[in-house]
Length: 105
Image 1 (cartoon, helix red, strand yellow):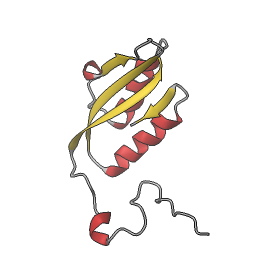
Image 2: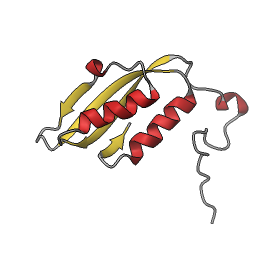
Image 3: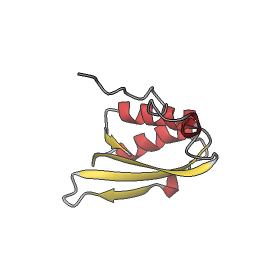
Image 4: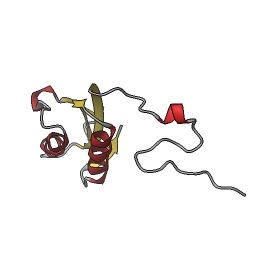
């Protein structure tokens, strides 16, 4: 039995031709990040703080917030000006490690 190879951190899946391993995005670009967490005090502020650490020009006033149907969760969309793949990887890593975050898309 063989096991599937996992893509390297921040990299493309193995087996792709070299031409497909190049950036799929051209930078800079507007990049929406969707973050879900419990609807608790301080959640949005904590996420804005993390986002601004990696994208200092992010305007907190542009943060979109959507509560879940029953109000248990809060979905946030932060559209940043992404400047590199490394920036996005670092931001995703910090967001997914945050104790208040359930999902990052």
